[in-house]
Image (tube, rainbow over the protein chains, first blue to last red):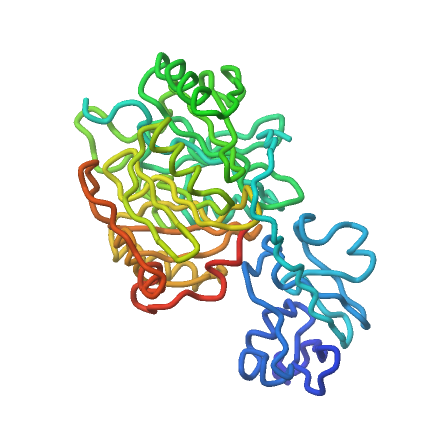
Length: 125
Length: 306
């Protein structure tokens, strides 16, 4: 049998939508979504997981896992704190399914404040 | 010597999530050389065509983004001159002692109105693997990977970029090569202290201190194609390109390092002189200004930063 046929795969669904897309256990949910019909939108009811850096740094693909087993890769703590991680928040680009998943897009709104702050950026902090 | 004062971008310190993945990306793929790894965890890198000891510093931690960008000035006395000018302009200046980075002399540092830390320094050791000086071959050893020749410039996102513009012009003698004007004010500025179309650029953004990209210079449009081949071969996350910027006229690919920090490979771009007029873009044409062939922004340009 073709090894492609026996790769472990899981169904990824967004909350309140009927469709799902397939994600292999060794790839990220975001990568599977980008490959799905209509770049994923065709099966997610047009709901959106935004695609950014795909590397755990920018935070735009943040989701909350509502059900299902998974593991994650390294994610910037600026976007998913340890506490949020324990509550099921993750970046879809660092999310590997170990079962079928139901997700809620959870991108943080950009800050509205437009005045600068006094930043202390210790280069070694 | 016609270029005085602030000479050019000298170094950038970038936060990375995973050391080994970052090294594979910056050394094997982009083509930088590893110079040293120090006890505090920071890793020092340089491009093959740079004379100075290092130009890129990777700091492993649990967030991505930029810690600091450093500019080299032409003499130690310039540091005192700029300290006074910066303080008189209204920014607080701090001091980083010689040796805080290996091989680098004393630095002065300050935080821009946009929230970014900038440092100036005059002294840095000559690299042990510097480009040939006597009867020089074209390179010391054949370049690797994408064959990046130098750390070229950075684009940073933050508020109050009009104040940044005034600061760079009034305190550091930079020139404004290009800008995007909108009914809401200036959206973006491209500043130069040299013959390059830009040495640092800023886009208006609500959150201070954000990092859009660090750019690495390649020699030709063909090298941009070769870089694209490497990105495809090694499944590197691409943002946009290969394409061209209307602004600066450079040829480009935006892509991401394994921590989500955007990199650019950049070739071409016009030669700038300080008597050139500022090229100005309106909001209706800014898509063409940023991505000349697509003629529109992508989703990520204004929203994906670290």
